[in-house]
Length: 81
Image (cartoon, rainbow, N blue to C red; front, side, top):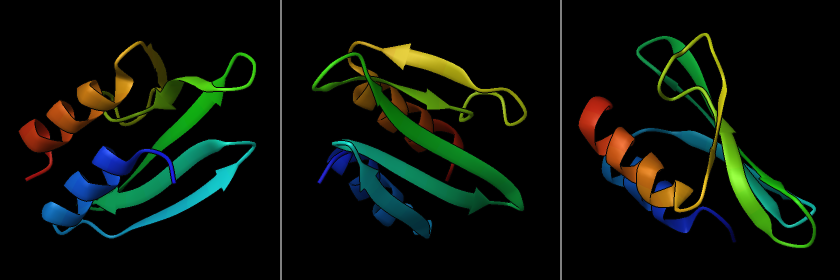
């Protein structure tokens, strides 16, 4: 299972989500206050190296690399209560 801390945070916040994996990359889609959000891991080889998400700007996706899961969890805790 991928994006474990992100999934844990969504559960703690009481946000229902859909999770699946493809090619060893995790994907999460969820609704919050009527808006649709996504978190999709991508890889540059064998292991995931980042995510594409619209958490920061609902209508615009952006890529996050590095410690992306820490960044996602902080954003969820800050703005999705």
